[in-house]
Image (tube, rainbow, N blue to C red; front, top):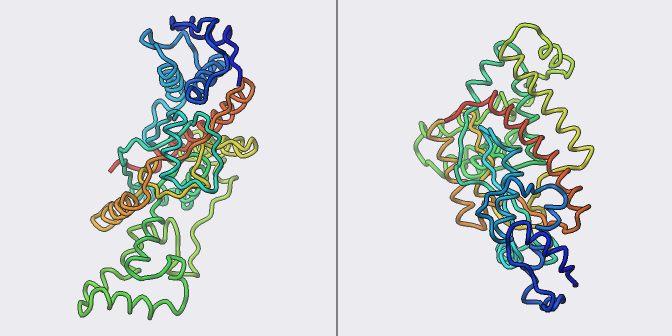
Length: 364
């Protein structure tokens, strides 16, 4: 690989950094590969206007500083004001990326030793409760909360992992009743569940009753967010037309605010899907998610909190990672421009999802 010294010196000079003397060989040895790759990336980010040099602090003195501060500014300008989702972005050089990928066991995902953009959780473990908002909305517009909740789930698939109550419910189903949550709908599951409870609690009928699906699952949203105990029970469905009618009402109300933000998220999600825009994920990597974008309870009590703590500890004791996703960045200006346009669309979805979550959840 050959470096254009004049182009590189132009970038270095702009940041008052030492330039490369013309006598220095322009065909770098392998040992210098990481630094050269990061320099190329920095140059392309500046040329593509992803990084605005005029907004960088005067303390920037290295390529790493340039990437750290420049990308942080770009990212924070799009995530400023988030109240529910905790997420941060960063760059790994080749050496760091290779160490991370050894941990992930990325046998199914190719890595070509370039700089890597990654997103991860901040470690705040933010928890939010849904029950209060759900009951408030169901009293005035049955089905509106469920429609908003399901749209948040759809948006999370292309943005950042959210820990939803069903995930906790499924895990407690395995641990307590020795079956998948979906198996609870089977007519022959009653005897299996009774045996699992008897094996766990022995001759303690009160505890067996306390930990029966009928008592436990409503804490995780059964009957409101999902319904497995009663196959005949249908959760309320709300049409898009009805949502638009609520959103267009003149009188300000909580339901109108939710409906309006629901439509905003629906639009940005539709645009992102058409453009195939998404945040990086962990596809092809083996690793248990430790930090999610946020943790959602339906009801916050000792049982539901204990279940989330168990799930986090299980992930940390296994192949745990706080990384939400990663992607090896291109280095050409045209490819950088195109990728960050896609990234911008995905972060718009994330911002709109955060705003809707703020309306349908309460801080714990």
